[in-house]
Amino acid sequence: MLKLFKHFKTNKILLISLFTIILIKTIGILYIPTLTAKIINNGVIKGNIHYVLKTSGIMISVAIFTGILAILSTYLSANLSGSLSRDIRIKMFSHAQKLSIHDFKHFSTSSLITRCTSDVNQIENIVTMFFEMIIPVPFITIVGMFFAFSKDSYMALIIFITGVIFIVFNILISKKVINLSLKIQVQLDKINSRVRQYISGIRIIRAFNREKHEKKLMDDTFTNYANINIEMNKILAVAMPGVMAIMNICAVAVLWFGSMRVSKGVMLIGDIMAVIEYSIIIFVFLVMAIIVLLNVPRASACSIRILEVLEYEPEIIDEKTTEFTSSDKKILEFRNVTFSYKDAEKPVLKNLNFICESGKTTAIIGATGSGKSTIGKLIPRLHEIQGGEILINGVNIKDFSQKDLRDIVSFSPQRAFLFSGTISDNIRHGKKDATIDEIKNAAKAAQADEFISELNHGYDSFVTQGGSNFSGGQRQRLCIARTLAKKSDIYVFDDSFSALDYKTDAKLRKAIKPRLKDAIVITIAQRISTIMEADQIIVLEEGKIAGIGTHKELLKNCPIYMQIAESQLSKEELE
Image (cartoon, rainbow, N blue to C red; front, side):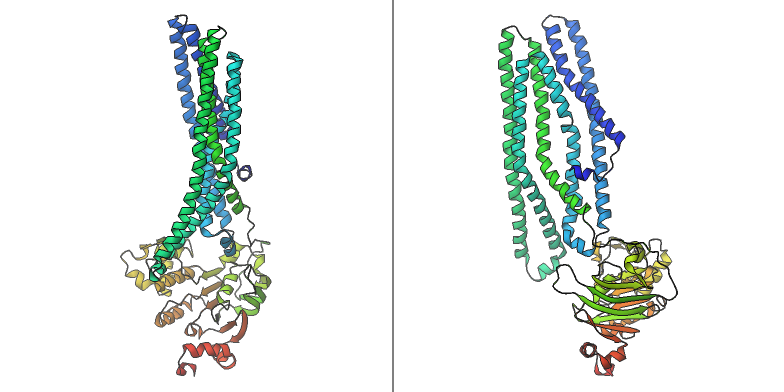
């Protein structure tokens, strides 16, 4: 965990203040048994009521002052741990923003959520407990033992031996707990993943009548998690009675030996009461320390998982920071580009060479799995190519910062995803300072204004996460509106018209053409009707270019394009 804390700056003034308050509070706690001994020895036994009242007043004042300091230390430790957990989450989120699509798959979404929520909560809790239950222990143990020795060395020796047994007992328990803690966190990831998958795929599960199968999988996952927790609780169930047994044995031993020494006249009754109180204080703090230390292995496992994210080297990094210079004539070039997913047997794209120019539309078509969508994701550098270059105005996109590159690329993904919020909020994701007129213009061009106007709240209508309260076609049009709201040099539409009917598709393409007349437009599609009017059509087959040309040219000289056309168009349209 110390390695994790090195990643963050701590408020030194707050930390010093907290340590000082804890120290003073601890002195107050340890001073009370001494006052108790004085009251008994000098007041009660001697019948000095004035001394009893005077010392009792001092004791009450010390207790109140110590209580105030305890409240203050709890507040400061909670503030410190809360600030730390906030900083960890912010840093994890910021680092996650740098991860590529493949990097996210390396961790899995559910695992990242768990690490950012429950794992950080574990760290926050252990930090709070550390200040309240661990830091005072060394001071209380040393000073408490010193006071105990000052009263009677034999009594203090009993406390010392018991303390050693405490420590050995804790070490044995911790060794068994640490492995189970790691297993618990792994199982928690699996539960989050399973539940998330079930909720996301509920319609498919019901459609194929797979409820019983999914229930069995869920039951197995929950059972495994429960079994590990039961095993953990069995160990903890042994730990606490063991601790209490050691404490009680110590108390009995102190009373027995103490009564013998009092009867011999070598020890006062007040002193034996003080020794008992010191033993109780020491063991109470040792018990609290054991409780914390039993949680340390789990928190340590959580810190390891958090560090795995924070120290993970992103696949895509900014090597250079060449500033993008816009020009009237923009050129996007793929030069011998080769790309393969990690652990894949063969490349998805092989030696691609083509040029896209501003003012022209380049369409990409091909069979499923030919690599169409991959090309779209390579342009904003969502993936890193293994060979060749992607150039914008002759500059390799690796020479631009990812932020600058994505500022000039407007991307409409294959899966139409909307964020929770309003319709206008979603369109503003394309341009955060877009006015309502700009939002409406983008929606009109995307053929979304018509159905938005029919909604009760119009552009202020609520959108659920993922846009599940809209149809597939409506989601696509809202995503296209979001893409159009952003003024860019390059527009990529990754099969963004697939859920639209032919009439809406045609109207949309006609509406966006004048808006994008000065930009590079890349349309990835499976329907030929969507790309027939493109200035350049690239036909892909198994990651290679099988043909480049206009619709008419490809019908004549590209057999693969002809096959696609024959499967989608009528004879009249082919002619």
